[in-house]
Image (tube, rainbow, N blue to C red; front, side):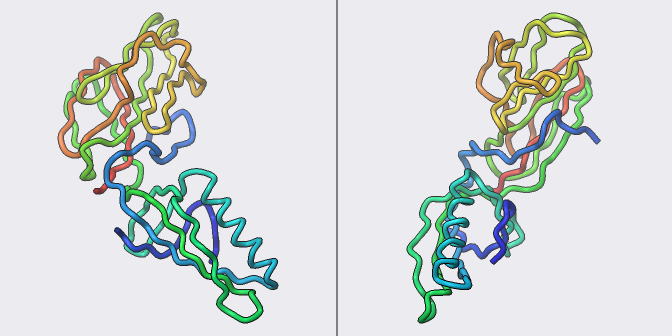
Length: 216
């Protein structure tokens, strides 16, 4: 089995660029399901097999991982149980175990470009709430309010005209020109989300809304 940050395993189900590297949402509350990953680990020796299992477990423990599964879906998942290794041959060079994870299925990152005169938009997916990222360009120096879909906002101060601001509900960041801007937040009502289907956005300038469709 080849282990990488974008996993390929078996599962049993129970152009605008953002100012920083996109990441999958890690705070989703909807669509969680149980994922079982049976794994056979081959080593040149018992010690080598044990070391490979340890490395695989460490990779899972590093945080959320992305799984590309045979059902054609991509899942963001978190390890719950690393299972117990069992020897499959007499010399201990083959170990079998089953990893148990909790995760949700999502589509590729969607980017919507919304001009000021567009007040409604459609979001794919089936979850009633999906974290999103909103990016806007500041038109006047001073304060700027980033309005959220379906209500809520974040107010930022001490900005310059032309600054690019981003309120990122996916990775829980507030950025200005790619740098942390939490110190400039004067008011924030949670993090922005979209819902499957029709959404409203009461904004006054062009906005970029990015999200990963989540399927429950």
